[in-house]
Image (cartoon, helix red, strand yellow):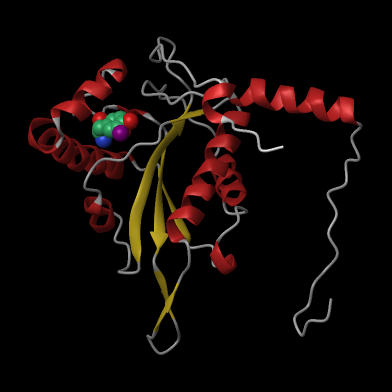
Length: 224
Ligand code: IYR
């Protein structure tokens, strides 16, 4: 391939046999199927270096034109966590009282959620993922990013998978609206909050809703 741009050779060769491919893919399914969104966290913490590695693992996700249009803000300060909880609960209280439809609240009944979000203070780390709609070029001109929601969604998927792989737990929390995070974390105009992800260990008495995953026939259609 002729290109004025440099390409480098690629290899991730494991050369697994077909049997190994099947066995290992089953293991991946079993492992990922154990992931659950947790709302009950332990106060127990772990080294910040772990979070940094997890964030950088997330940042390996594919993105439109490799713009990597994300910023991961990690909050461990108790004062900031408290501010975030107060602001999130205020928005959530209004949402549950007047913004969410009856149908929506009915759909949420199995999860037993309400406006109260104590996990925002209990979890040792809150990762607030911001999407970057555009970048500021030198001189202040705006340079648009591409497929920003898809890219940041993928990075969050990588992050959740990495967290789960360590036996840690997380919640994909979307207090709505989320602009309070822009203010509290003092983020620039090109960034918008995308997802708030508390990370930690599950509380000893943690429970999760008894829900089921769709089966193969419901999610997979073959065109052979
Ligand atoms: N943001 C609210 C409501 C909520 C909405 C959905 I869609 C969920 O899957 C879960 C909760 C809250 O966090 O309670």
